[in-house]
Image (cartoon, rainbow, N blue to C red; front, side):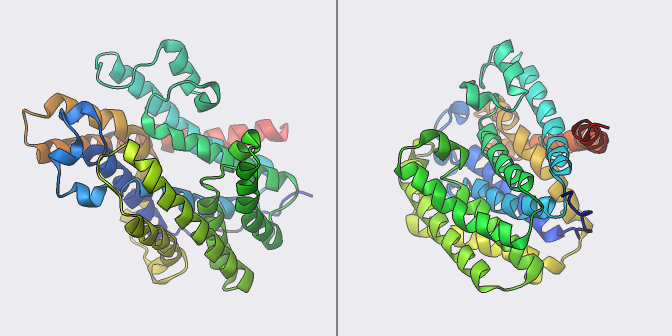
Amino acid sequence: MPASPAPDRPRLAALDGLRLLAALAVLAYHYTAIDQEFWGHPATQEFPQLSLLTRYGYLGVELFFVISGFVILMTAYGRSLPAFVASRISRLYPAYWAAVLLTVALQAFWDGGRRVDPVDALVNLTMLQEAWGVTDVQGAFWTLWVELKFYLLIGVLLALGEVTRHRALAFALLWPVLAQLARASDAALLESLLITSWAPYFAGGMLLYLLHREGPDLLVLLGIGLNVVLAVHQATRYADTVAPRHSDAPASQVVVALLVVLLFALVHACSTGPLARLDQAWLTTAGALTYPLYLVHGQFGFFVIDTLSGRVDSHVVLALATSLSLLLAWAVHRLVERPLHAPMRRAVRRSLSGR
């Protein structure tokens, strides 16, 4: 049965602003809190006070995943599978291709970042490089593989029929539990497909969309609670085991737990709560810059830091690295995303529909 025409989806400007906040949190973490050689010593030594805050910036990724769960379910509602696939391909790939090509061009004359050979760079253009064990040209690209698997799962949901409240609710309640069972039974392929570590964030975001769309409901509220608890469990274990590999700044499990709860609360506030009423145009612009900023900030910011650190005040270097990343993000959005998004979506839709 074909999906009914997609209803008008009002723009949630506050959610756009929250997306930019998440990207800036990740940027701040990478520039001021991780152990990388570009400052000449650990970044926490360069910014001992600032890093007390930015050491938690990696949770911007978790915030992205919650927002993605919300937005992707909203996108899937009332759409056919071809329309959904066309929407996602045209949204992800133009800016991503630009970021890959810009990064490869940067590495042609800067030897301080990640080095990939031409074939690996070509594989990176597919966004499937992790499946082949190929190095990402930018470290932050690992999250795109996670997002692609989430889109695959939503695509399967759409292939089974039009998205309804009952199907979305069942999916968001069962998915994280089944994912954990796959991990417990050492079913590696199934665990990878079900993205066990990140499932509670996406599923919680989906349930927040159901709350936004249809109002309070006992099962939806219980499902949100379940996924928040699972996300807190994941985040505190990550803070204790994985996060220390990237930074010598210890992350408090209590602070991490509180921040994870806050992430879900912020998405609710920006979509259904009082912040949902915000309608400033600059918030929509902020949302438009978020994805390209996330894509380009790594290597290009590190290039500025590597070039200027030790010769220019560190706070000035930090401001210049951030400014360059924002400028590149604007250029990618203005010169690549805006002109290519709609034509590419139409072309992919025609191809999938056989017309």
